Structure formats: structure tokens, C-alpha cells
Image (cartoon, rainbow, N blue to C red; front, side, top):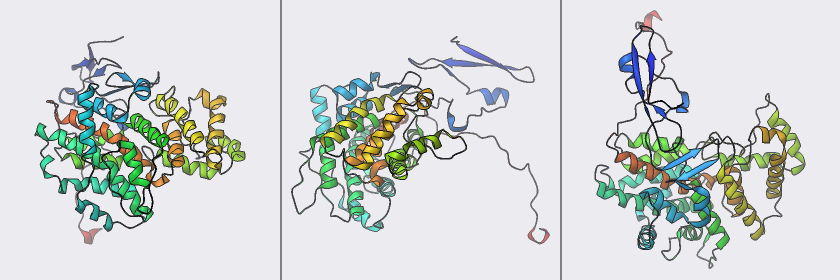
Length: 430
């Protein structure tokens, strides 16, 4: 039953009334702000899995029902009817744009894609085999050394400039990282191409021949970027908010989010899917690996199945599954053993009682990795692609946080379990 307040009585009989905040959707939140002051205790919540760290109007998730809403609009409707640039506008500004607004936003993004030549020379300092995520986080962080006009987080007039600049330039930075790894010359962006077409052009064009953009590939990337655009207070988004709460420049905050996304438990999961498929090797080995996944004493895990938040199904996976099969069919990649293996594993997981009972359905990481592979994107670039889509969510949350009158620097507390106070012992007595 929903309540307006909870009363906590401590061991000494002193009572504290904790107010309850109600959102438009989702569970109520107990305000524990005065708990330490009145009761002398902290709350303990490792991983912040039951803690509301902020108020937000951007994204809502109902993991039990498989619901994902961007500014109140179901992800299914956006995936079917919208495109990434329009979704980006929605996340950033709260409403779907009209035609003049969308055209102006799209034009601004297209015309901010160029990098300062000094930033391009920065790439020459990396080893040829550096991980692209290392380059991405470093170069994004370095943007604060080039774009001083957007460093003042307290100046609302600079927020749009920063926003358009980071969204426009991130694909260019990602493509430069890919070209360095591939040993190919950098390809400059083209303003006549849309967001995903331009990305494909910068990734795969070479000076020696004309590059023809595959429309299915561009559509697939656009859909993936929509699905990856935001996911509430996940690890990387919370990192952006925490870094930004100190007043750090926004480029540093986004770079921190990129670093958090790199982890295999977060954005690196789609890389792990491909490594898992390589380990399985052949469809004939699937039953053996499925049995290992069911064995609690075995450390092997089927990557790309289940989700920490979604206890029913991941609505993004339902959407991307159709595109995955479309990409494999229309790009002629269904005869590749790895894709045959992935589809066979998908079929078994959707029918196996063990997976059904535990809601271990293929998630968005499972399908996105297969799509990226089919498009010819190297495995090391998978998390970079995730970052390109997620940046708009990070920026939307940064903008929301930095303009919140109740903003305070993030400062979690701890349960200390170290030694009690003790005296220093001089070296000659140890």
C-alpha cells in the first residue's frame, strides 16, 4: 500500500519520519536525507540497486513488464516510426520536434562533424593496436583542450553548443580510431549524408575507390542507436552524473561515462557475445555449452541472455531481432558459420524450459553483436558503437542534472570495516 511517510524508531526510542516521494510511474521513493542527522545511521545498498539517486524526466523502465519509455513514448513506437536524430531531439529537449525544429537540429549536427586538425594529430600518439575505447575516452576528454567556449557549466547559453558538438563529432572520433587500427587513411565527414550514412562512409571508404553506402546497414545502425540511446540510471549514466556533479567540464563527464561503458558487464557485453560464439565454435557443441551454463559449479555463462533490469523480456531485443534477421538475409551473410551458430543458439534458448523459466531470453547485446559483425565492424569497435548511441542519453542526463536547482555534489557514504584507531609504530620497532 502506498504511504505518504514511513516512521523509523531507533534503539533509543527516537522516531524519525521519512517522507515519501511519488513519481508519475514506478515505485515510490523514501527520502532518507535526514536519517543520519536524526538517527546517526546510514543506509547500506551495494551497487545502489534500491536507491533513487536523482529525479529524472527522461527515461522510465519497468523491468517486470518489459517496458521502456523515452519521455513517455514507448520504445516500440519510436523504433517503428522515428529515426535517431529525432529521438535525440526528444531525449534532449523533452518533446518531439516539428519539421523546422528537426531540420535545424539535423543541419546543426551535420555541420559540426569536423574535428580540429590538432585532435586528428592526437591519434598519432596511440599504438596501432590500442583499443578503440581507450582512444575514444582519451580524445573526448581532450576536447576540453580545444573547445574552451563551452567549459562554463553555469552558462546555459553554452549547453546547446556543447550538445550539438559532442553528438556530431563522436562518430568522427570513432571512425578515426577505427582507421588507425585498420592502418588506413582518415576519411573526412560529408555533410550531405545523414548520421549513420556518414558513419559508414568514414568507417569504410578508402581513397582508392568510390564507397557505396548500404541502405540496410544504415537503417540497422540507426535502429541500434535508437535502442541504445538511453537506459535510465545505468552504470555509465550514473558515472556521467557523478562526475558532472562536481562542476567538471562536460567533455570530462562524457569521457568518464565512456570509461564506465567499457566494462564487460556493461557496454562490453556485445563483445563478450562474439567471444562466446568463438568459444562454442560449432552448432554441434551447443548442447554441451548449454549444459555448462545450467551447471552452478561451472563458471561458464551464456553471454547476451537475460538482463539485470528486465525480468520478463528486453523490449529492445524483440525489436532488434527482426532487424538482425533482415541484415543477415539481405546482406548475404547467412552462410557464415558464426551466424549459423548464433541463430541455432537463439532457437534453443527460446525453446529450452530452463531458459524460459529463468527468463534468460536473448537480449539486445546478443543481437547487436551479430549485426555489427555482419556489417563488417571489428569486435573491438562494438562498445564504441554503443557509446555513439548512448552519448545522447548521457548528455540529456548531464543537462538535466546541471540545471537542477537541488544539485549537490555526489558523495556516497560507506560501511567502514577496517581497523579501529591505532598508534603508529616506528620502523625500528616493527
